[in-house]
Image (tube, rainbow, N blue to C red; front, side, top):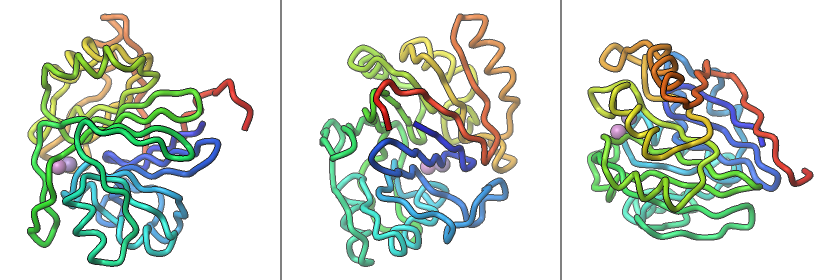
Length: 230
Ligand code: NI
Ligand code: MN
């Protein structure tokens, strides 16, 4: 499985049986390594509807014919613009042909750029190929993350560290402690001034605690070796 960081909280996952995009904020993101019209994907997973997560979803979903997976209220808004959706809700899971997706709570708001109500903000656990990934979306630290760590043996956690709108480095370190992922990738920092921080501090402190963290630059690809043949 290949995981490409597209800057901010956007990731492109190339799994055995599908290409999945999470929170594709490209247009307007100074760090985005690709343009929306260069991406062809099967599914888009949205954690919430804020502009820096919804991003280029409408365009990419339309030209790819992709299905957007998200909470039901946001799915309803997307369907009105002609987008294919798979509506879910917090706590629910569904097994797609390529893997299982479960939505969890996130401590955050959600609203579409036109001001429409978009339901609750979510985090997502994806079990695909033989890997388990957690993308927390935008969230503050919350104690029930412990449950996510207990229910899932996480190979990878993608966690915000930029503060102001989400966890900062200190809170993200506590999140790592209770989630116990094999590897953590920090996200949602340094895209704009309000969320500036030094990710190396996160790496050093996590390493001191015995956890592995990988800083990804936008455009970089992480290969997660899977046991199943492709
Ligand atoms: Ni947000
Ligand atoms: Mn955000």
